[in-house]
Image (cartoon, rainbow, N blue to C red):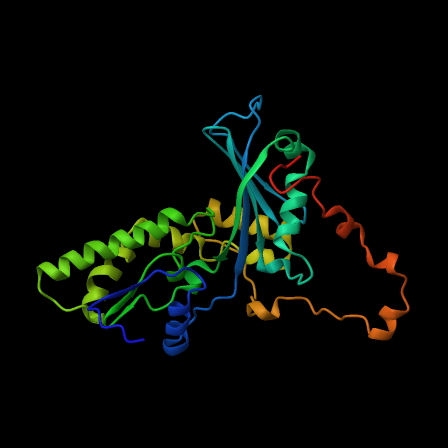
Length: 289
């Protein structure tokens, strides 16, 4: 495909085909790497009419159903709830699925008492690029610029990304208007002096630098990770834990399957683990209960 626009804006998310192609061709800036990922998954549930949860209620959790998993529940108007989890790359277990974990999560007694009579309206999942500024690619070149999560804008100390991604788009928009008014071409030099300069001087860059090493500790365990985030947050990024973060594919624990002979000698009942037995939700396609 030939792209002949004067300026191509790449905002295709953390695993976008165009962004990946650019990274393969250009590489990443010195010292940058994308080695931290997560999968976010959520349900949108309509609460029953007698629900006691008030709009504006916000719950954040960690440690269930696995120590590494973060969870959330947001109550919207009209009795709608967003409830979900984040499964990070440092979980390193290839044998579990986010959908199963989310089923376990909503059945925690504290949540299930409110959700069990609700109606599932929709659900979805999204990959998250959690390297933050350490995963920032080259932001511009001759005829192209990158914005949004794929440009490394996500703040992993505050766990926020929507506002940051939106801000990078407005910064590029302002730069484009400036260059058009000056009748200047969209070269790397001009985009660097306008778009990148705006971004470096903004709160997005300030927050990204503070959060750059906030998640280091989690590669040494959940407790160490929480201490590391607290240290980074309290010092504004001046102090943080050090960590060796291997490439994402090396963070997965080796999985050694049983041989065919071992499997054939087992009784069928032994294949059903307790977690597999608990993974079935007591609900129909439309109802949660």
